Amino acid sequence: MLGSPSNSSGSPGLKRQLGLWSMTLAVVTGTIGSGWLFAPYLCAKDAGPFSMLAWLFGGLMSFLIAIVFAELGAVVTSSGALAAIPLLTHGRTSGFIGGWSVWIAYVSIPTIEVLAMLEYMASKLPWLTVNDGHGQVLSHAGMACGILLLILFAWINLSGVGILAKWIDGLTFWKLTIPLLVSAMLMWKQSHWVNLHAVIPWNGSVRDDVLRAVSTGGVLFSLLGFRTSMDLAGESRRPQRDVPLSMGLGLLISLAIYMVLQLAFLVSVDPAKIASHGWAGLTLAAHGGPLVAIAMGAGLIWVANLLLIDAVLSPGATGMAYLGVSSRVSWMMGRCSLLPKCFEQLNIQSVPWFGLLCSTAIGILMLFGGPSWQKIVGFLTATMVIALAIGPISLMALRKQLPEIERPFRLRGAGIWSRTAFVMATWSILWCGRTSVIWAVGLILVPTALFVIPQRLRGRPLDLRNSLWWILYLGGLIVILLVTGPDGWHSLTVLEQRILTAIFALAVFPLAVASRLEKVSPEAELEFSKPRT
Image (cartoon, rainbow, N blue to C red; front, side, top):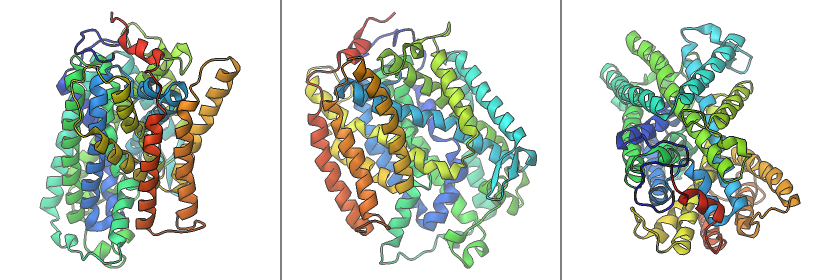
């Protein structure tokens, strides 16, 4: 739905059942998943006591990106909107790139959440994992449990968005309570406030450590859940009001919880464990997760048991939610002819059942790859931020394409906000590291070629000219990493690389906006403006 102030029926075939509370809880559920079980430990290893700054900076970056999407979410109020916005402003090829980036990130998250669940539960059920010589991986029994969990998530989603909302509402209350309770108990029992004492060196190493914590330490990965609200917009009763409001409220609640948890982690670590090799050398029991190790070391057996219970519920709720929203993304791509039409099929509960089953099947296949939470977080963060980088560009493009359309939420100073958000997003992609970015770009461009070639042979319009900025942008990122990185042909300092990247992003931004369609895509406009049933 495009630009209508209110509608009670939602996207074609989807039912508007979600209120502000459920939308906010969906954002919290999408944000507080396995990240709270691992990110505090990884951030502490990267930045020590300065990891609190990493959460503040990551929260600022997420807010800058979210506020851009707040206006987009109030205008484009259909489920799977993140997949359709680039199609709306820049045509079919851009629509595929943007939609595919979102979808591939979303279908990966349930698998990551299941891996986190099983890794934590392995401390009580050691038969879930085996040591392959490089660390703990899922055993055959653990693999079977992971498959059954993904099937359970799919079954709950197939029951309809109303049932999913009830699960989300109940589980999110638990997710709001347990991290705060665990944090309070760890700070009360341990209270090693001396761990926070640190001197900021003059060589800029703290700055680099903080940025590493933001990217590969799981901060951005954990805080980008605000987009869940846009993916469920077609099932919101009052999307123009509730989508931007739920994004802001959900992000604020989640950031506060993460910062309290990070503080609790920092002060609960035994000072002897960091006396010799500092925070970077901190090692905790690999079997069962870092927070369980701290709780067990403090003699808080009941807290450790509570953590293990939450290791099932928190990642489970997040995995369940993302499996659902991934099907909405593929549903929208099917409706806009970016994926085969079978993806737009709905069951009797108005759930995109074919897309949901495909997402589940891909998640199961990913389990056999055996990636750990820490290894995959950089790749997923890069893919997600690439998908979100289109937002600031599409916002400015829509301002020019549809200047008169009603905007229930209008961002003041949108030009400045959008450019700042685009620079921040570009920095975030680079901070994920060369390997993660190359894999992410490859996983986007190769399927794009497989989409473009047969469409071209069939003589279908592709709007390639309007999509060339993507090649410039993604190719430029790879060149910057290869040339100016630590092992590059002309290595630059972090500050110099950041300045160069900002100049590059600010140069690409007006070109990308100028590459917009003269009028919004008729395919996407028809999808958002057709009568609702």
